[in-house]
Image (cartoon, rainbow, N blue to C red):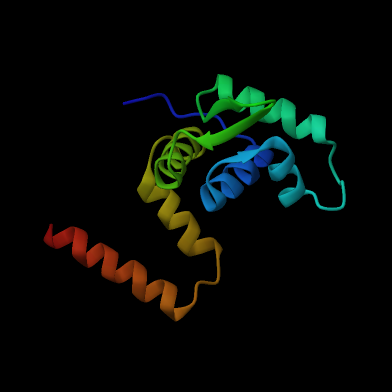
Length: 125
């Protein structure tokens, strides 16, 4: 199994925009995420360059502009991040994580029903 990628909060935001929109320039990502200039353009540029080095993004130069697209799909990245979190926080036990979540949060009836159905399906499989 591949080593899970470490991904920062701002990188999740960048990936979210790219998963939704496809191929964008740094400027387009920056404008989507920070329309009021809450973060500098160069900050987004630095993160996107690092994400390219981490093989999260592919960069292609068209004319004078670099365009970026995700190299990893959303579900794969979520799975990798979850595995890393569970490994670090719950000693690798998904059961312990599930118990913690059920015990610690006020889950709706709909959430509980969904969890029950998932467990029942796994028991049959």
